[in-house]
Amino acid sequence: MIAVARLSAAITILDRIISGAPAEKALTGWARQNRYAGSGDRVAIRDLVFDALRCKRSYAALGGSETGRGLILGRLLHEGADPETLFTGTGYAPAALSDVERALLAESAARLAAMPESVRLDYPDWLHAELAASLGSERAAVMAALQHRAKVFLRVNPRRAALAQAQAELAASGVVTCAVPEVKNALEATENSRKIASSQAYFNGMVELQDLASQAVVSCLDLPQSGRVLDYCAGGGGKLLAMAAQTEAEFFAHDANPARLRDLPARAERAGIHAKILRTEQLRAHGPYDLIFCDVPCSGSGAWRRAPAGKWALTADRLAELQQIQAQILDEAAQLLRPDGQLVYATCSILRGENALQISAFHARHKGYATEIEQSFSPAAGADGLYVASVRRVTKLPKTP
View 1 (cartoon, rainbow, N blue to C red):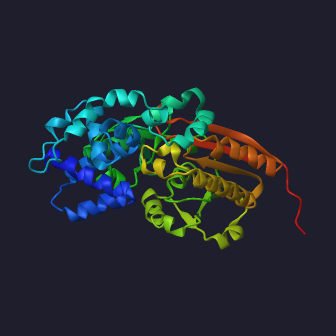
View 2 (view 1 turned 60 degrees about the vertical axis):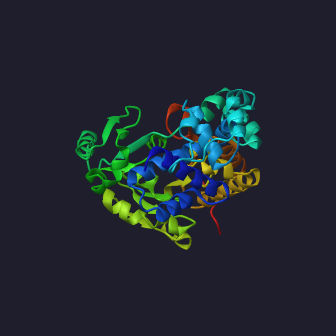
View 3 (view 1 turned 90 degrees about the vertical axis):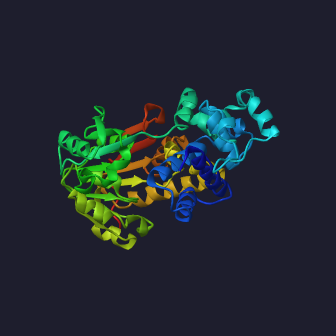
């Protein structure tokens, strides 16, 4: 496909997403209907679509409308390209610019500059006060970081390879990496990151795709070297695999939606790790646990550059619902903890209501716990925005009759 045909495809897909289709479904549906598009075309079109979703409000302001066409026009202007040379209406190119569009584009920069911060930095108006309270003077830097593509990070599995060995194996597949000194066993993919999933290093369990902040969350924990560890909201199991690679403790995985765990057995086998999957009714029988890790459902605001559609789908009501779920998970997990056990709470959120305020509320509901670890990771530092807190029960509960 030529470049202008990719623009036309991105416009079509964006219109489907704006009409309510999930982003991944819209991309997959277009690819199935247009099988002539090669892998390179699909990757380029995906990048166009996700760039537009990250910057939907600012691109719409530049391009004159919140449509697929308006967003792609806005992206071209943002990149310094001349839409007149690409929107020609010839061949597979998007339709030529109208006189109205030319007039709008001519004044687009001034129009965007006059817009409120929430438009220029691409976030919903209703979140402004919460972001200001949560991020303070860092708000603009954090939201600007979320307008850009995420870097690609890998975690080297020490059960399978040393860092240098994994780098060499990746290089043999054309993937160029560099070590990240701040986090042990972390690599950043700097070239050909899309070849990782087909590399021998990946198939052999030497490496896992995992954001740097997620790796840092696990690295800062005081993991028990024996005993029982429960990943209460395990999902795909990425953090469980990272924890299990560092300790000989016995690992258990649970998720309220068991379907999310379907890939974990294969991933664990590839990594040389054993984890027993538990249904909800089995949790108490295998407890109590020395450490319970709760990577709770959240707004995903710290990872909006990876899943930008979530930024626009989030509502105040949904955020309130998520906060209730988070509190409930903490309360449930606390009942499964051994008397001196460690309860770890983590989110991929930058919002205080999902982070520090949840831990404060937990302490108000549950006496006899002390916070041992509390740390936030900012998207402005280059990885996802995450929060982690570890509380330990320091007083024994009264015996139940």
